[in-house]
Image (cartoon, rainbow, N blue to C red):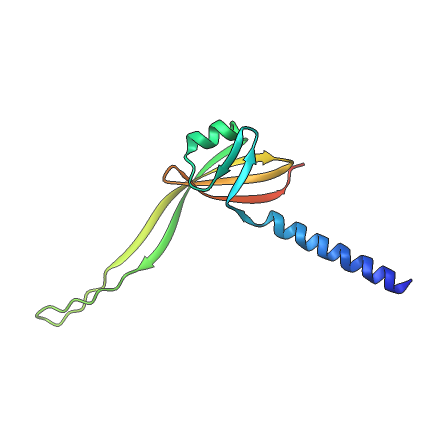
Length: 120
C-alpha cells in the first residue's frame, strides 16, 4: 500500500508542476473567439479577433543601460555618456478558456502574451 501512495503522490506532484509551468509561460500565439493572434499583431487585429479586453493599463518601462564613451580633450578630461531608454507598454487583459491572458503591446504591436492563472 505504501508504494501505491507514493506513486500517486508523485503523479500528482508532476501534474501540479506541469500546470504551474503552463500558466506561467509566455506564449507566441493564442486562440481567440475570432481567430489566432500572434506576437507582432497590431492592436486593431487583436481587437477584431479577441474583442474588447476586460482591462487596459499603461505603464512606462525604463530599461537602463549605459554606454560609456571616453573622449579625451586637451585638458585630458574623460567624458562618459549615459543613456536611459524609456518605453510605453500597454497591457490588455482577457479571459480565454477560463484563464487570464495578458497581451503586452509596445509601439502599437503585440510584444508578448503572458498566461495567468485561472479566472474565478
